[in-house]
Length: 544
Ligand SMILES: Cc1cc2nc3c(=O)[nH]c(=O)nc-3n(C[C@H](O)[C@H](O)[C@H](O)COP(=O)(O)OP(=O)(O)OC[C@H]3O[C@@H](n4cnc5c(N)ncnc54)[C@H](O)[C@@H]3O)c2cc1C
Image 1 (cartoon, rainbow, N blue to C red):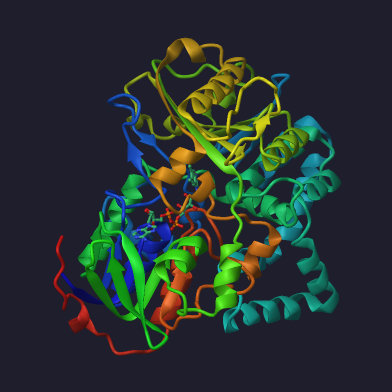
Image 2: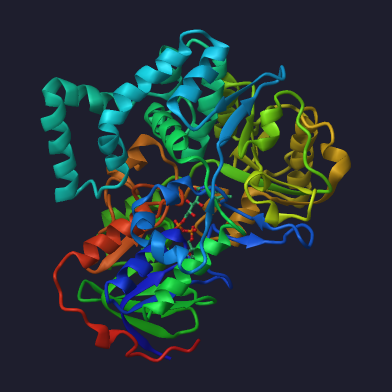
């Protein structure tokens, strides 16, 4: 069957849903098409271990969403559709091998006191960081919330230039490229402070020695202090449900089980999409594709739809490290050794510190299973006890330093065979992580009721956008980041095909639940004062 809409959105990740919701509220007829049986992409909540244990299977932490532009615009309407956010005063901490820990808290004074506990003077350094960062926070966050190759992007540059002057502007831009290691070691005395913040660069797809990771460290440090670690009551799926309801309430349609195999291009313009079963869905004003460049240029577009050099460069788009998720259902709450705050902290990093993260990243980049991975231990029950039976425990564990194909084991323990993430390799690697964690949580192993592990290969099977098990939709090395994302030959969101827009984690401002790319494209599409075409909304027939 054929339908006609103003916009067809390919994929139902957070960027798609935010984009569709904004367009639908703006009077556009929208249709979201998702190939999997469930909507939401990397947001999914399910009882994947034991009944009564509600796990966020992929993403779990929503500070980027709650701090983002889409939430600012849609938050009230989503709340009216049942979405409720919970938050904490203990967003994150790091536990070191000697049992000492450090915490990032919710106010400048609290963080200064915490850092001074580890090295006198680091509290003052934190204060100085805030003093220099906060007055220009609009510029720093603006880089992530602006279409950089546009008049708005030029406007942001001019604003910075006017405010900071020539020298200040040069300094500001130069400082954006500093590595996390260089920023941390020149700012704080204590290795505890370095180890507290360095693991957070993993959540931006970088490592602590990468260009621009120092800027991302500061952005995250300030964002966590100011915004905490919000999660939806009942799991991330509640955000998806509320967005879908908002789209439908505004006349839009969201369909699962609909694999788009082609963008239909006529005379250089995208006019709709064709599904794998042959159905076509027409788009009168825009096709918005939330896919990787690999899929966009190698599957959805044909030879001749785009200049050959752009297609060739898209083929060289690089993916980042692979990732593993370990989900544990426990019969009781984990009892951490050491600081009692560990049991109440939303996200605990278990690592030897800055050099520990750096070493594990380097090993993974060289194709090895790291000898001592940075273990990200998420504890959603600290905010939302409704996700497990009374008194029970539930852990969301993330390992972001993995090769997508293992060439060996830096610890010399595991046989990686031909490098494929077999069930055997996945489970043995997870055993190693759980055993290490058990040294810090003595009741861990004896209270595990069930465990579900997802390897990089499982992630790719679950969501085609997580190619090679890269959770972030492509390497965020500087040449594929910011001004140059997804890749320098086709940066931003407009594509060489008129009316075809590219969104999702592979595009600026990259991965995360902020919905930045979907929001930027929706705003661009809504900007021209076109007459509302409500009549277009449901002109077509749809099958489900
Ligand atoms: C394991 C994991 C943990 C994470 N944790 C966090 C976290 O805690 N906080 C955070 O902010 N970020 C986190 N992230 C990152 C964040 O979840 C993602 O960057 C973000 O959700 C990606 O959203 P997206 O809009 O790019 O699309 P995705 O969520 O990747 O969704 C894309 C959708 O498009 C569909 N699709 C693709 N091609 C087609 C096609 N041809 N036809 C139809 N449908 C198609 C796919 O099936 C998929 O459902 C995590 C990511 C992963 C993988």
